Amino acid sequence: MPATVNRAGRFRPFHELARLWKTSSLRTQLVVMTTGLMLLAVIVTAALTASLFRQELVRQIDDDLHANRNNVSVYLTSLGTDTGYFSSPQSILRFYGELQDNDGNTTTNSSFTGANEDRPVVPSLTADEVLERGNEAFDVPGTTETSRGWRVTMYRLASGEGSLAIALPLEPVHDSVDRVTSLVVTIGLLATAGASVIAYAVTTRAFKPLLRVERTAAQIAAGDLSRRVEMGAPDTEVGRLSRSLNAMLAHIETAFRSKEQSEERMRRFIQDASHELRTPLVTIRGFSELYRHGGISDPDDVGAAMGRIEGEAKRMGQLVEDLLTLARLDEQRPLEHRPVDLMLLAHDAVLDARVNAPDREISLEGLDGGRAGSAPTLGDEGKIRQVVTNLVTNALRYSPAGTPLEIAVGTVDVLPGSVHADGRQVHGSRDSVIEIRDHGPGIDEQDASRVFERFYRADSSRQRETGGTGLGLAIVAAIVAQHDGTVRLEQTPGGGATMSVRMPWVAPTTDEDDQTPDETETPDPSGTEVQGAQEDPSAVPPVIPPRPPQAPGSGHSSTSE
Image (tube, rainbow, N blue to C red; front, side, top):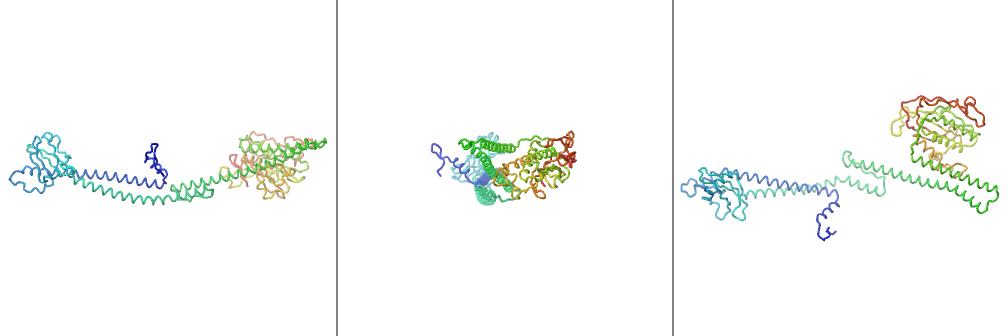
């Protein structure tokens, strides 16, 4: 790839390095950062070592100069005399000495270093300047081009007749510092190289779980949502990441499956709705075209055709109303919760059913076959009435004419081990129950699990004579679910189907009207007034007072047996 250049065509190395850094793997970046930090540590260590080592060597030179100042002074003073007082200068051959008078003029210096040898350039200082400077050592250059400097200290002579300058070369110091620095840098670079190799191997091994995560993610991206990341140690970052990823993948898989199921239900719903709407529309259009083309001219035929058109329009209107009802229920609009007694709704349903099916024996009884009891709950009375009406209508429609129908009401204890909707354990709660029992052919097991689906009917022919649109039980299930209840299908003993609705039992309020159907006159379908259970116990049985509460509180969610 060509190097990065700016508009003027010049090479931009920093941009190229930044691009390479961004495109490199995390493993490479970690190794490079580790190597860079180690190199920085080596450089800092070498610099500090060289500085501290040089200071220590210079301090030793200063101590050496101070310790040998008297010997050098005696030696320089004895030069030019024939006393032989200092005839063996071997102990001070490594020092350079120089005597200056009080004006700073050189009077004597050591000559054992040789004429062509390097010598320090000692500054000429007067007596006052030497006193002002003190005995602090300082660096001076040498006389040769290759000189690396000298360390000089100046002292006043005890006689007061001059000053002494004593010096040592700094070349041994520089050589020692260079050797030590080279040694530290070499060892540091070798250690850095070895550590980089080890870091790369360790990082590669440590990143193996992440590589597995990457491969698993690639397989999931390819469409395999059932794949899961291999779990690592739970207390490590990789282990926590794997656990979080697996939880996220489970949610994603569930969401995708729910989406697919929702789309499948929507497609089936649209197909069923289209099928149900097409039948009345075809009928209406057929009779309309037949009338328009003159195929129907007899008044009786015209009346029959208009009757068919009106009937199909009513069916289509009812279908649209059911669809709107389901749409509103799906929106989860808030309901108006008020105390409702299922006993009163069941009583009204019995009266309505006797009017609609006078050839049937329709009775109100308790869950155990005795007298019906009060079953208080909270909810929207209109919606709950719709549930009861739909279930009774369904039982009348799908059971043979003349067969009996029972509506049972009461309360039952919630089974031990049941849980609320939020997962809490149920203890001592009760449910208010209403059951509609018919004695028809019943429902097959393969159809029982789908009777509450929208547009589903056990009769696959979809003939109008055998049933409606298939939305009645779907509406029932939706309304009961909004009231935190359950509805289920059971087999009636002796044959038939039983629709059982359970809703949370709620203790009745103290100011609730305790008037029962026994005390209320109800119109008889024949037109004569009856006095409830006093004249016809089978039609309007007396109401049993509400059961006392079995557990503190109210409004628990119901649980199926």
